[in-house]
Length: 143
Image (tube, rainbow, N blue to C red; front, top):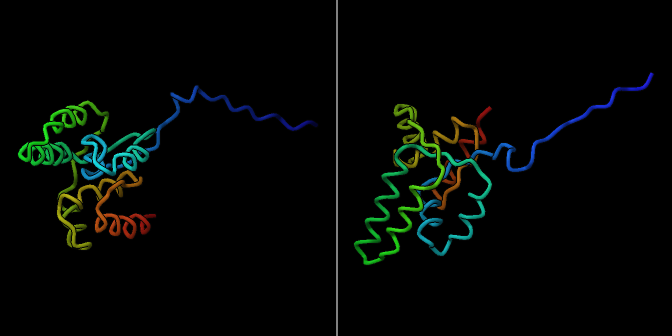
């Protein structure tokens, strides 16, 4: 008896699921404000489904305000670009965020990104070394 043939039909590439990525403000700022690390940020964001806690909007606005106060008028375009990006924003569990902040000596802001990456069981993109170290440890401990 001949073994059956397994057929796998796939949609065109643009319809395939884009892998999730939690993006923090440092990564998004590099991308939209054209920082020196823009290319590194772009490489990580391209082709991904982006996620962030709701506070990302306030953090990116804060970066833009600092730049505008220094006379960096391009910050307006960067802020507009950030607003146009497809980033799924999430509420956070404040108790769990506080616990992570205490455990890893992070700000509650940074712990929010870590919590979300753990909740979604996906990578976290950041240029913040302390947050990256905490994420490496915490995400590796998930089952």
